[in-house]
Image 1 (cartoon, one colour):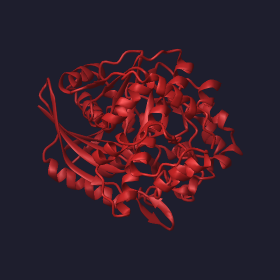
Image 2 (image 1 turned 30 degrees about the horizontal axis):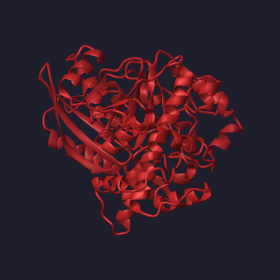
Image 3 (image 1 turned 120 degrees about the vertical axis):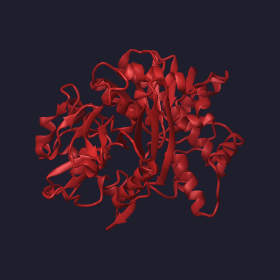
Image 4 (image 1 turned 90 degrees about the vertical axis):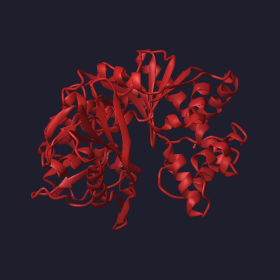
Length: 470
């Protein structure tokens, strides 16, 4: 019997999940949860590192005796450490506006097309490279640690750079599996800034007798590690604050077509490539609910889903990734402004806004899979949705209807299960990811959704969606 502790931190909330493995079955429970609220320092948005560390230690007290622990987090964000290994300033939040002009700055040194050819990452101003060129503290830094590696270091004092999280940075040459000298040299970033690269499932050190493991530090890759019963024609969707949709490939695809379609390559827990699109996801629903709460209107997620179902279908759409919708606050007003700007009907009610978000996400999934099929030559006949979004039956059904294919939903706790499985592999309790997936398949409930037969309506909506001009 082995007991492990998985820390699964998103940009909106954090959790600790305690799991036991008896040689056949993984049993687990959430023992701690907290809201990951950013704070403002000198007009900029930062993660509250002291608060998060306090929550980690609260979870450790609740957990009691465990054999190992590991962290997975959102991608791209980092901390800079000085010569004394002290964090210079709380890590910047990727939604901070300091990177608003970062792409223009970066283009003066190396074109986006060249950057993509070197790294294979979707060009997004939140990526680590673009944050670094806007970071005034870079010249003071001795070491950069990505978020999961930072928490590992703060517990056991060992510095590593786990490969899945490094592959979100816009600085890794995925074909070589190492830092891109061309990119680092072009932007004046010292290679010595980075800790040694290590693969997922590496035991890094110990904290009070507990082994500290570097699992797939990027939460998406921990989640994808837990996908069950998938074949080469199965598309993958990790659905949470962000939606990451794509498929597994043997090597990076970073040609002109994938660049044009803004597709990304990231290293998987197995060391392969996940070829995917980053889409703003259920953050749009979460932010709508926060907006309403700030106005004194309390809605559960079930309330919002019910109101959406009661609202007129296909009234208006948004691009979930529009810069107009990226920042915190006043999202409902900005959705209305988006519809005015794009000459569409304006959603008036809460239900209409929520329905607009859900339908737009389903339509964006369809467009992304069309682009991925174009690049890979694949033809997908199933979409495997994993993560918290699998609890959202309306979105799962809309995805099936819009795509016209079967959708499987589950496991809900894919990210935590991937983290747990990779710890057990590091401890020698599970042979490999393939065996881990079989164990998960035998213990987790998967739901299935079939298209309802309204494909013609979705086809018409899709034509409108792809022709929206901001």
